[in-house]
Length: 235
Image (cartoon, rainbow, N blue to C red; front, side, top):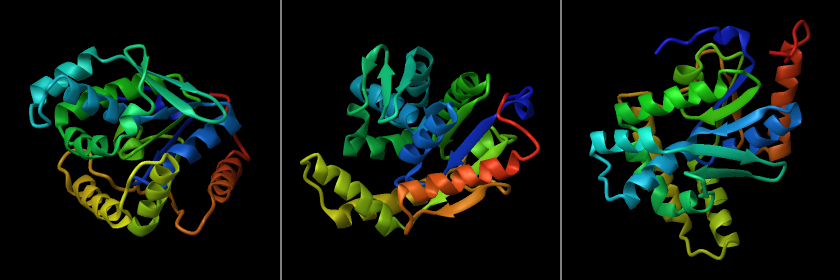
């Protein structure tokens, strides 16, 4: 899949495991810069849930590919949140159901699914001024992105964050179960054959375990501004 003129576009690639804070932080960085924010993890979740609703097994790669070709995904970002629409319907809450994460990890590992989604993600970012986050943005989707970050945190920290989110929504959850599931997902994402989770060699590594969201955002913006002393975000 060739990538044309990528170096002439301002793309901020943010990768890292689930629960590292990518979604909130990416949205805030995009808002600060006036860029478009694209949550690729939400895209994979949407495909997985759509396949589940259509009775397509996570091992049925042809069936999953057909979903990818038909599904229409759009985003609407505000200062407070990022909403995802699937075929015109708001799925923002639906894709965050606990079981969706499990099937997404298996679905997103399929080569045909990743190829279809990467093509879509590249189309979304072709005009630049984009903050895109996921698992393989800086390594596969936009390997020549102008800015790359890798956000990380311990499984315990990430599990606690997810646990608190669920409790705040009055959903039942067991902290240790969440931590165990995160560890399992990390293992799958890191060891999968196609587009495994890994940090790009030229990415800036940030451990968010003991940092506030604002601390992380400020650090990223400092890095961006430092590198722009002799450049601009104009393209």
